[in-house]
Image 1 (cartoon, rainbow, N blue to C red):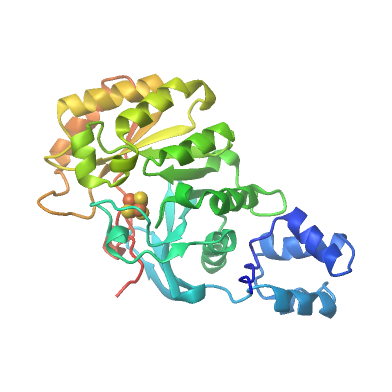
Image 2 (cartoon, rainbow, N blue to C red):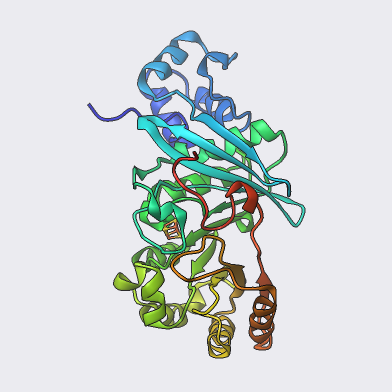
Amino acid sequence: MADKPHLLDLNLQEWSEYIIGIGHKKYRARQIFEWLHTHLELDVTRFSNIPDDIKNHILNDFYTTPAKVVKHLKSTDGTEKILFEMKDQKFVETVWLKLRNRNTVCVSSQAGCSLYCEFCMTAKGKFQGNLSTGEILEQVYIFKRLVGETVNNVVIMGMGEPLMNYDAVMKACNLLNHDFGLNIGLRRITVSTAGVLPGIKKFINNEEPYNLAISVHSLNHDVRLKIMDAEKKWPISDLVKYLIENKHNLKKNKLTIEYLMIGGLNMTSRDAKELGYLAQKLDAKINLIPLNFEFDDYKRPDEKSIDAFFQAVKHCGVQVFNRSSPGYDIQAACGMLKYQTV
Ligand code: SF4
């Protein structure tokens, strides 16, 4: 028997088909959708305006157990992190950040990751599979209910490679943007990728309306190969060529280049110039992130080198930000999420 869908997996159209299929009127679909996506109520028994017959059908046909909050950590800088346990003992971490007065949730798209990056703790754990749309959404919904504040921004930058779980991720983005849901603006939803070229092509060809953040980290094939196995399959030269040829399809200011600063590896003045030149060509902005999870002999660069690299990139006349990621003390910063907190 096929797995039961998660309660949050369905869009409004699919709820309508389900409700009609069990012999009820279509307007019930909207009522159920609002319980789930407006009121964030995941307990079907509390849908007070829904007849018992429908509730019993739902309880029978769907996976209705909400993700369990195993651990909820709070940083001294206001960042929070939850370790969730999901269906089939999948563990994922999710981060709540206050960035420039915006409440941002950094969401995981896979339990573990199907790719391997040297600088990332997630890569050291076991890959447990893709998350469903519902499992992606409930990270936001449960966190929002616990914190009790509005969510203004969602970044799919937690554990996993979002474009390796394309359909579930895009459906989750559409539901986050839905008028009867959290109604998060298109420009406030960002999908990140380690450079999965087939997924990037699909994203651009489908004209997905969300921001795209691409982890570049080096424009040199040999250097990138040392730190990201994505480089084996999708070399940076192919990626850059494709982006430049298709830049007219990327809406202005929708593309961000993520660049991890790793002392002694990718911070020469030539690296800075090449990076600035690429951003200029693509009308992209650049986020520079100092290394958080140190590996081999590579260390987080000192403040002086960070500033020198930042200035060298800025000199190219592009929009560049130094994003020293918050939540370091609770291992919630970029590259620090793992599948089980001990
Ligand atoms: S950085 Fe992203 S793509 Fe790379 S291993 Fe970590 S989660 Fe996966």
